[in-house]
Amino acid sequence: MPDGSGRRAAPRPRAESTAEPRAPRRFSPLLRRILLVNAVPPALLAASLLYLDQYQNGLLAAEVEGLRTQARIYAGGIAEAAVRIDGDRAILVPEAARPLLRRLVEPSPNTQARLFDNTGLMVADSRVREGPGGAVVTEPLPPPEPRGALTATVGGVYDRLVSVLPGTLRGTGGTGGVAVDVGPETPDFDWQPDIGPDRREELRLALEGGVRPYIRRTGDGRLLVSVAEPARRGNQGVGIVLLTREAREVDERLFQIRASVLLLFGTALVLTVMLSFYLARTIATPMLDLARATQRIREGEGREESVPEPLLVRNDEIGVLARDLQNSARALWARIDANERFAADVAHELRNPLTSVRSALETLRRIENPEQRGRLLAIIAEDAVRMDRLIADISDSSRVDAELSRTISTPVDIAPILSALADLHEATRETEEAPRLVLEAPPGPLVVRGVEGRIVQVYRNLLGNALSFSPAGGTVWMKARPAGAMVEVAIEDEGPGIPEQKLESIFERFYSERPSGERFGQHSGLGLSISKQIVEGLRGQITAENRRDVEGKVAGARFVVRLPAG
Image (cartoon, rainbow, N blue to C red):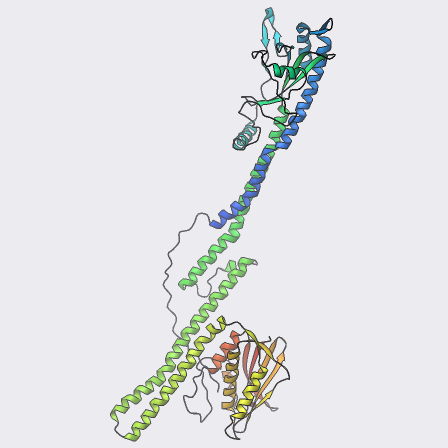
């Protein structure tokens, strides 16, 4: 009956691998990228918070304002209690100012007060006292409080970080003034006893209260803030009070905040690294497993289970990729097997006519009878025609898949195609006993998505098959109708039907079961196989079944083609 058959070929030898084996990498490039991307945000956050310029300036401004208020109080007390009036002049009395200045500073152990007269000469220092026998004793400011091991470690890390960052007030090292936005752009005033009264402009501004605070970092890491305020009696300046305080609270608060920032950064960095390794383990490692699976596929190993089972059961994108790769591998092996079977079947089918031609030629050399020679030549000619038909169908079958993969499906109205096939058959009927073709289709278009030339080829193959099995005077029906998202075309005949055990193998290549009386070699056995290739390449379906009458007897064959509606 209809065409199509297949034969199992020998197993395909495993291909030799041409790829060079790659040495395993210690860290995958994807892991490095994940670490870099995840570590950049906390690093930027830590770098930005290490500055803390606004907060630092605010603390220093508050420190300066408090110290300035304290200096004004000291200056007012000295102007009232350590000044004598000589006519219209107010004269500073150093002997009275020194004990008063020391007493005023006593509640503030981190503060040093110095008093300068109108000529710039220092006349009192809260850290200078008279010892036994009239000796002068200088008391330095208390040393910085020692840091613990953890605090020293954090401080050292912080100092190394900020040493490369511009614009920060460093925790240790460095000397000299650091300008802070706490007042107008005026000179500072921080005279030492050995400088001498040679800075007259700064002295004049200091007596008028127009110098700015002086902030500096000493060599042993102290942050010192100095302010100068004039001591006035009435409208007359009698001296200058210079207060210097170690801003330990500022350093402590900044250090606490920066230590917290470093701790948070370290914690975030550790978590980032751990999460990056976890992310790499769940992404990069499976990707490498998939790469190794593709290499095994290329080398012909793991034919059935090329992809590891743990990747196939994952419910994420990696699992989707693994399952698609496994399905692609199976489809590839199936295609390879099909091509091998096809090549074996082609060799088998071509061997028969070639054997016949060779036998006829060998016999032809030994026969002199013209009549017998004529019959042998006719056999050779028929075999040549048969091979030509077989080669043409084989070529068409091998081109179908590649052609459909390159061609874009377009809407095709099959109603005029079916009508033209019916009209062509009726116009070419040679006798009244030839089977009739009846078209049953609804009015209007029947649009499917496909390739018009290949769709016509499918219907012609099925019609030719049905007509060849129809009895004299029989009828072949073409019934078309929409079926949901598909368009269905059924071709029915009144022939002997299809053997039940052959319903599954009828679409195989080189299957051939022809009507009795038909001359051998008229069909290649590829018609139905090519039709199935075309229909499935267009994402459709083709099935074969038997028609039965009311008594359940076979009344013919039915082929049903369903194509996606356009």
